[in-house]
Length: 306
Ligand code: NAP
Ligand code: GLV
Image 1 (tube, protein in one colour):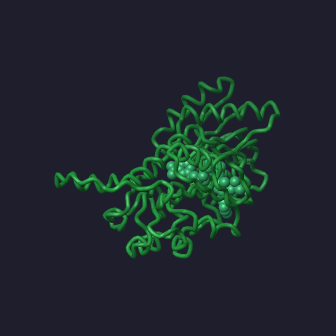
Image 2 (image 1 turned 180 degrees about the vertical axis):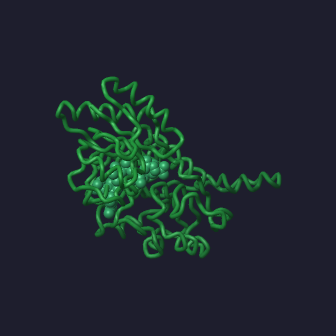
Image 3 (image 1 turned 135 degrees about the vertical axis):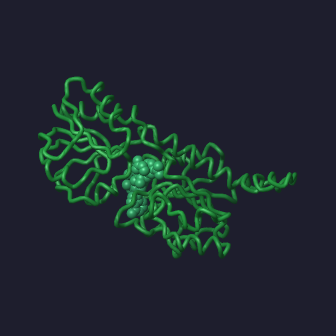
């Protein structure tokens, strides 16, 4: 069995080394133009040439959860694209979102400001029931985040394309229930995939339907959020602020207003990083399952875009 690996980052050697150790009977090689036909490809941000040359792949594994970048390439409709299913990202997302939520709810940013002036003023306690959390996207990561947020006893809602039932989560689905979901949300968490249907979904029209003083946490993709609309709504006071991990242009340009906005916190696309060990274990498990003719989870629907 041949496995082609492609990753443009600095860690490619470690991936290769660990993939070879986990697939001792396979020939695992870094892909380059003209490489022999492989059975499987394990890639992040592959070039079009890899897709065009490797026409006999049984599956192409994306070493990330989001496939929006991959789906910008011309892919044959029969290509089996497999994305990462959690693989250690769920717990990181839960940490990030709970941190952002609690930092906002408990006003830790205000206390950080007070400390600069040796200030000792307690803020009045806030009421959890007045901070319903709404999670856009109830997939692998969204559901994990919903369960984590529930532990802190906030009311939790969620929105997905098709109807879902999750214990303790008020579920909304489809365009018909989008307005009700927004109206029921004070802290919005975005965990949608970036697709033709979701591009720019966080815009003036949707954000202004959130409860007054709402807070926005975007940990999915920058293309979901119209950044100028968010800024306008924060500056008008309708939104209390935002914590953002993903941006339309990454790295975030140095002159971007988010860097210095007092009500916006930014992080460098780090809310849930790909864990090499867990990802390799998952991918190798799926290659072995496919070789045995068994079904696997995480196959991307190329039409739907996730
Ligand atoms: P997933 O399992 O595919 O879940 C996607 C969820 O979004 C599903 O609940 C789906 O609804 C819903 N959805 C899709 N299109 C929709 C639409 N048009 N309207 C309403 N709901 C829609 O994905 P995941 O593994 O949870 O990952 C989500 C995203 O997180 C990834 O695509 C990636 O972009 C992002 N991500 C970011 C980082 C980071 O470090 N910032 C790390 C990992 C992932 P159904 O349940 O009905 O299918
Ligand atoms: C990271 O952003 C991913 O999609 O895994």
